[in-house]
Amino acid sequence: MAENKEKWENSKIISADDPCAVEKLRRKLESLKERQEYMKRANAHYKKHRTMKGFEAMDDAAAAEMDSYILLNYYGHKPFPSFRLENNNANIRRIRERIAELEKRDSAAFGEGWAFPGGSVVMNAEENRIQVFFDEKPDEETRKALKSNGFKWAPSKNAWQRQLNENGARALRRIARIQPENA
Image 1: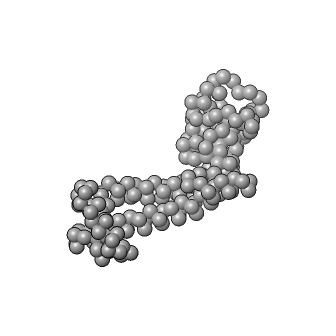
Image 2: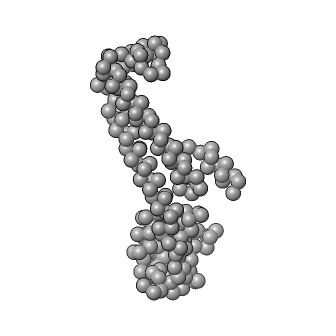
């Protein structure tokens, strides 16, 4: 477990398996918001003054370099082109949605699982997996249904599994053979 924690801390990719994923995503979201505001202020400054001189935290040499860059690279004659602001905004929206999805998963929105004739379904939040266990090898039709709904056989767990998320929960509902006994 200690080596996994170190791997997560050193990685730029924020995996849903990471126990600190929501916290890291919130930090990333704040960074993206700050960048968005900075780009807006830079564009507004350039629009008003037609130079980057006098812009916050930018000395005259850096401002002159930025001015020449703006003139050489036509992006509507502004420091940050519209597509950069739009892409950053899309990333902000994507990160917000991901935080909401992880918080929903963490609040046990998926439940604990259930038993069905011949096996059980487990919502394993610790491993971020939906796991389907069978008492015996399932028939060909059931295996085909599991595969077509994104489940993979994990011999190390002796279970069929896929990522624990909304799509996985919807996939479970499509497989008639593994529905709860009392349903």
